[in-house]
Image 1 (cartoon, helix red, strand yellow):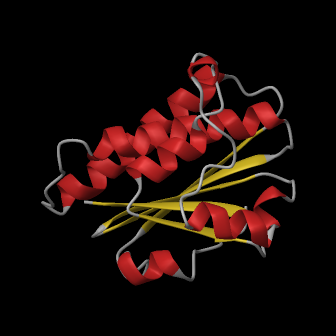
Image 2 (cartoon, rainbow, N blue to C red):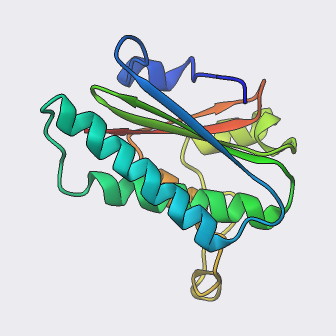
Image 3 (cartoon, one colour):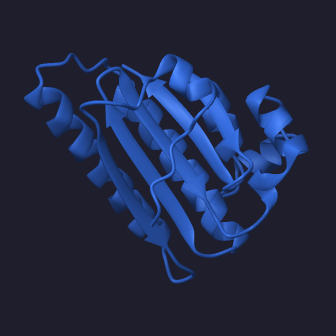
Length: 163
């Protein structure tokens, strides 16, 4: 897995230099929701170890915000079925940044970049769609991320969560 970093909006609020941790994981068509959940739990444990080792305060809802965004975006991306699906995680002093990428062209589109970075939903969330086991990823990203960036060169959705 190549190490791509966000280079726009996120770097302005969450510099990814110096004492950082990078991790990545790739999902395939056999990946289950349970595997995704275990992966996100593992990421949360890595974050906790990183911050506790440095005596950094961890806000009460920090892991919840990260976890909801990670699980929803990964489940949605895996259900779209364009494999492989990669999840990248940077842990830094001020917070974490996660990126989700598949092999499709969706996040390579400039119109998608403009809407996502402006926090405009791409399709309406209705009571019917809220009952599905997928389809809420971007709504979670918009509500629980401090900064959002779309890398149209590499097709990655980045979300930053500040401590």
